[in-house]
Amino acid sequence: MSAFRIRPAVGEDARVLSDMLVEAANWDPVRARPRVAVLEDPSVLRYVSGWMRPGDFGCVAEDAHGVPIGAAWARLFPANAPGSGFVAVGVPELTLGVNPQWRAQGVGRALLQALAAHAPAHGAARLSLSVNHGNFAQRLYVSEGYVTVASRGTADTMVRSVR
Ligand SMILES: CC(C)(COP(=O)(O)OP(=O)(O)OC[C@H]1O[C@@H](n2cnc3c(N)ncnc32)[C@H](O)[C@@H]1OP(=O)(O)O)[C@@H](O)C(=O)NCCC(=O)NCCS
Image 1 (cartoon, protein in one colour):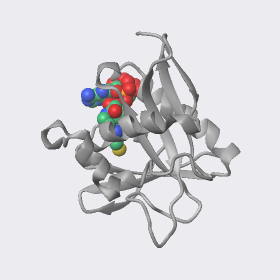
Image 2 (image 1 turned 120 degrees about the vertical axis):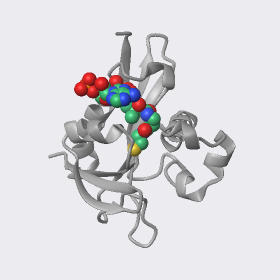
Image 3 (image 1 turned 90 degrees about the horizontal axis):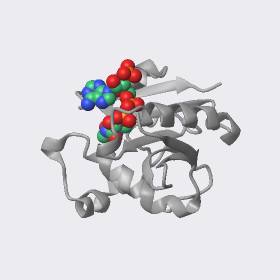
Image 4 (image 1 turned 30 degrees about the vertical axis):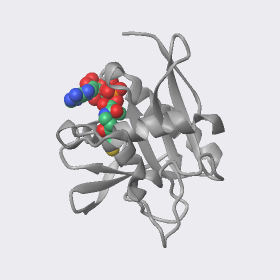
């Protein structure tokens, strides 16, 4: 396994998070869209637009040279403009992505664990997410304590307690 480290995300990570958001949105290679099309989609862009705004927090994984290779972050949405994995006001929604060449080396799991560890310090008691049916990431989420609480169209909403 190659070496990587996890650090807290900062305001200057908007580009990194956008890159990982594209990876997350393009989880199914059969339906992958060009980066520009993904980031023009308001239902996707809402997860990074204006990063880092109050309530946002996250973690970035870097390789041994300090090059970002993955990120997990959480963002609050209001009830009148919810994200895909919205469960309640005050429950931030998670986004996760890892560079293709770094997958299946423990980066995703390490990011999930680091984000959950940071969450209470940011006032979160729970984290939520939306995962499409058929994405193996759902098994990863289950193994990290996420439970399916709703099924919406082609995706499940999952929640875990972090306290
Ligand atoms: C989902 C994703 C973040 C996981 O990150 P990762 O670094 O590859 O995951 P890890 O190496 O930590 O592996 C986590 C578990 O998933 C398993 N796994 C990894 N790649 C897999 C694959 N292609 N198919 C099935 N299982 C896989 C691993 O075996 C591991 O399980 P284990 O610990 O029991 O062995 C990453 O694959 C990714 O960015 N995918 C595209 C974006 C995406 O789907 N984001 C989530 C949207 S909800």
